[in-house]
Length: 196
Image (cartoon, rainbow, N blue to C red; front, side, top):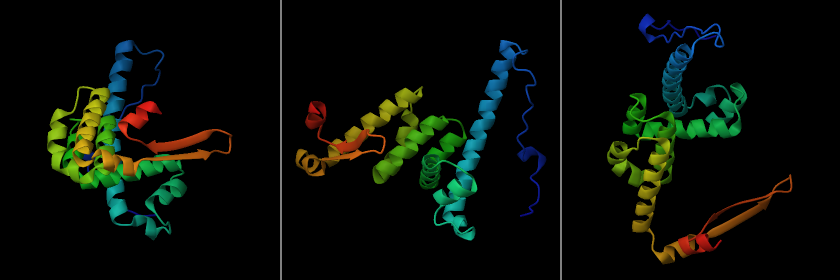
């Protein structure tokens, strides 16, 4: 077991328990939920920053895992999709310090930060150029932020892709799953997508 110096008292997050949620008033439950959300936010940012450092340092190699996702799946018994999402967000947080800072200082919510990190992975060069402007324009809600990023991505894509390039990139992948369902993914031009 690794022994480290305990953190200073002001580095602790202490949350009192609400012993009887049913017996508490609506105001007490409201206050408690807001406290829990604040703590959850702090822990999520701390988790992402720590995971980013662990990924950069290849800590998973020390424990004999081929990747950080494998480490999270086996060592922490995490579902694969969730582990992959956490690792992708940690990598994006390391590459986009302004977005990480905005998230850490609660200028964007955790859901909005995940949207921003996703966008930064899809269009890394364009996002890094526009990161500050996008953070200033973040909407009042998750839906507004998603819509803003959709508009921005379509604007960037319109600038970069002509109709011929869209035609060359189109694809339709279909697979039959074990349960009999058919799944797939596609990239089509706007006209073909609307027709489909």
